[in-house]
Length: 459
Image (cartoon, rainbow, N blue to C red; front, side):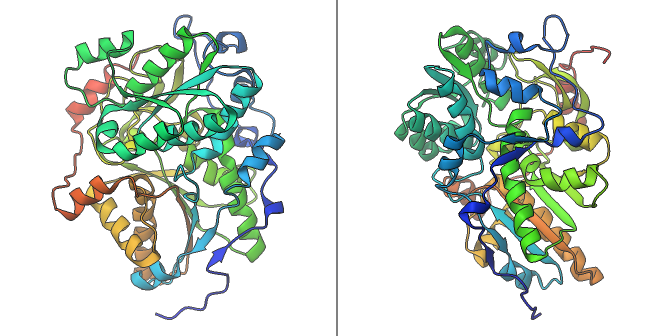
């Protein structure tokens, strides 16, 4: 099928078109995300109660439900110019391979050393830590993109960085670990025996491969026990979705510049930051009644928080040291299978996205690991980019929607987020190519064990 290309293959914005503000989608939500709760009092957390954990300015952003646009500080704007604006690419080769009348575009966030969108928030969080006069920060990482991004950002601002990496990813992705160490970070497999919560988790779950919930617990414990340190999170929180809105704002600018009107917007969903960032300005239009879009969150069947989880207040971490969030959750004790999409192995979903999903403004679907890698392989062969396993979830859904268009003849426009590259995920590709990759779908009994850990607050 020959198609006329009406826009450039790659849409590059000018440097002066990089957004100078972040967009806070909460300002346009009639029903705001439920507040974080203090795990002891079960009352909404105050600014002062959050200070031992988070940087002051990040707390202000976390609590701000009303300011639509928040100015990006000049030093962050300057850093963004190293790798932004990122291209919006017309996937003409993928369209041809699928023989579809659909128009497919992807926003590529892998053009930086961290290899993903995570640097958008990492540099902001490191900047605020430096401005507050802190010595360093702690964090968790799953696949390693967030840990890599924060290591880079801390190196740039001269901060110490302590990373707790989910044990299975620490073992599967040694090269990602070495990039973090190259930028000066201290990287520890989680759960470790270095923290009280780590020792407890190892005792309760002998031989565990870890989870993001475990790693978060350890990072928070260390941050609150060391003077001059704070904890920084790479997804889930309102502040992170805010920083990632630069993805969607650039996408919207590119679309407006060339008259592209998406019908469907798709992103992978683990904690929710990349999807929340991509859809932010489009969701704002939808919330204000100015336009309508189908928005699809794609998650692994092995960790299906939106598609099979419960909407309830739960602990954000396995060790129960973090605030409680109202979100779609599988239970903080849920330990996902060691699938290869490490960045999507979190038991809960962003409160912002959870509220939007609960209110019917977006859809969700789960996909099997082997189907994800089939899509990743096709994409790599025709578009020339090896995608991260996380991103490949969005590719799978985009291809499925495009194939539906082939059946119906509908000429829909699809945009998906290509959040990063997969060059540190070659063990996963090896498993797929060798035919040893399998699909794990948790049973109702598996999920019930996780659900049993969700506290009954009556809220």
